[in-house]
Image (cartoon, rainbow, N blue to C red; front, side, top):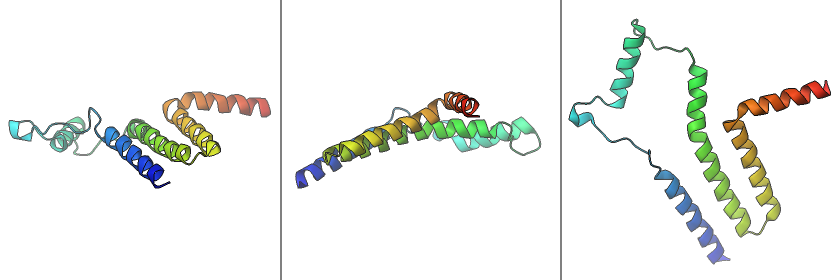
Length: 128
């Protein structure tokens, strides 16, 4: 039993470390080469775009959704994989199926929200 727990923890740690070493995890620091840091570049871009010194909030919801989708999808996949490994190690097939279904539904909501919207409208038009 202790060997299964150790194996599960080691596998989870391996998955998490592999996801942390993604190809674009951290950009190189070019501040010493005369290039502005990313924070300075963002501030100068914001100031030059509006002229009044304030930021532009047009399309903030779209930018927020793309930001959340960018990091939420890998987090959901890793979390679902770790939970699935734990459920399979304990030989709980019902929990394994449930984890897979919930993870897939979450990924559909994140990756294809328009398909969920059209499905909900079709169900509503049929029922009502």
